[in-house]
Image (cartoon, rainbow over all chains, first blue to last red; front, side, top):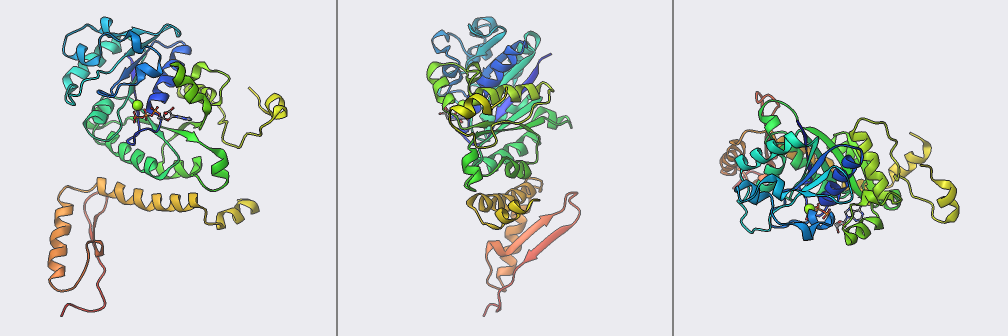
Amino acid sequence: MAEIIVVTSGKGGVGKTTSSAAIGTGLALRGHKTVLVDFDVGLRNLDLIMGCERRVVFDLVNVINNEATLNQALIRDKRTEGLYILPASQTRDKDALNHEGVERVLNELSEMFDYIVCDSPAGIEKGAQLALYFADTAIVVTNPEVSSVRDSDRILGVLQSKSRKAENGEQVKEHLLLTRYNPARVQAGEMLSVEDVQEILAIPLLGVVPESEAVLKASNQGQPVVLDSESDAGQAYMDAIGRFLGEEREHRFLEVQRKGLFSRVFGRKG
Amino acid sequence: MGILSYFRSKKQTSANVAKERLQVLVAYERNQRNQPDYLPQMQQEILAVISRYVDIDVDDVQVNLDENCSILELNVTLPEHAKD
Ligand SMILES: Nc1ncnc2c1ncn2[C@@H]1O[C@H](COP(=O)(O)OP(=O)(O)OP(=O)(O)O)[C@@H](O)[C@H]1O
Ligand SMILES: [Mg+2]
């Protein structure tokens, strides 16, 4: 039985797809058989971030409509052992996904994988609700910015009332992933700090990913940022995955990094 | 809390403003989520009754239920003068 993880946020453009790709790849790198499922029907992008866009033949909607088998639609990642991608469809039909179909596909995937990572569309309406409905665990991606924090709180409300777990009187496990964090602006009092966001949302902190040039570079190349093991963002995501797997990892990249050769050579450990 | 952070916290930075706004808003919205569906309608009707007597706005009437839906709290901010 796989653990179903939804990467969600309410607000659009905060880094769900970036984070899904990083977390899915990271889990596979750590030896867990993982599938990344793109729920963003009509706006699929996970394939592009994972660099497999030219290998998409069938998608999630095809499998739901029995136009393809799961094995036909799953794309095996060429770089990372044990990692597969199930792309979303580009259809404009918003009702292409249905409850029963998604449940059947997730049940089938559950037999094959350790982790199912669902990349949610933005919003708190049907598409986002379906992506989170079957989740055991939610990773709530938040930017240190007022509208993102508010929307995260709203999506937490949905998780607590409209998920399968909630309907069965259980709780979806919640994790906060703060991304695009800029320590210099936090220090200047121009950006909400990690403590501020944690205090407001009151859910456990999985990790803080700094605003990083490495993310754009990675997406340009179609490589999840965790494969850039030198990068701050890549390391922050791998730390978060370590914590997800139950390890103690100190939070890094929360302070302004001193620039220059000296600090680069001597200043940072690990 | 160190002396440094004491001085820092006195400064009203934009991040502090953001945090305070969020605290108020999020608390309000969380409260709304837990309330039964009839509450907005009820608030409207209470507002209608009160405004027959005094000039008030939507914001001047607040209807809240406590967690177990057992105590209804009605908050009305009345203007200085009654309607003439
Ligand atoms: N840590 C980061 N540093 C810099 N840029 C980032 C970071 N995380 C994400 N981005 C950038 O933010 C943009 C949005 O990211 P992404 O597509 O992952 O968000 P999303 O939440 O999936 O969006 P949507 O709601 O549209 O699906 C992208 O241009 C991405 O490169
Ligand atoms: Mg996305």
